[in-house]
Length: 193
Image (cartoon, rainbow, N blue to C red; front, side, top):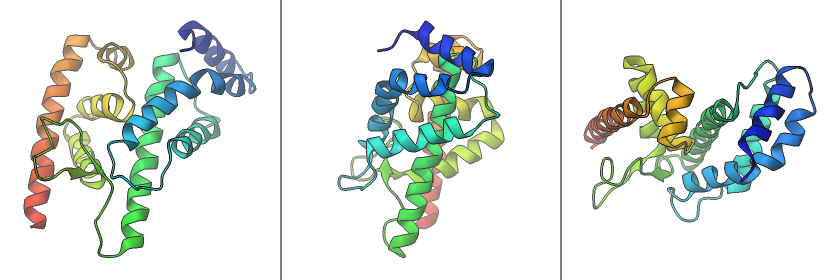
């Protein structure tokens, strides 16, 4: 794992106008981004064709393509990376569903084994994304908590730092958001039955 201060220093150099700083950053964050992407992909169905490497590279391209984007520190960088990974995975699920025309709607993922999964059925990524959009319209911080924790793999402490709240608040928001999503995904499932 790379030294967080080295990552922050490179992000500061980028913010101050050094375009090569992001190129030097990639080898430092690659392992961490790979772990986060792998965790997301292992929640999907076996046999999906999207690879960990593809997710990491596509996310990194999104991160470096945003020339107007500046990153305050390591936590902020990984928070933005979480958003990029979510977009990539949801776009992949949509393309996959469109290609199948009438087949399963998306790649299956579980937000939390206790909160969202039932013994005989998992909930798909598109349902989760729709529920997150619904949650964001009710409470943006709760939606960001899910995005950071679930898609980004940030710890409670890192999520708290990214959101500017206490770890206790993150834990409470995480419980509340999971309950909301569980309810929203269940309602969608019942409506589709």
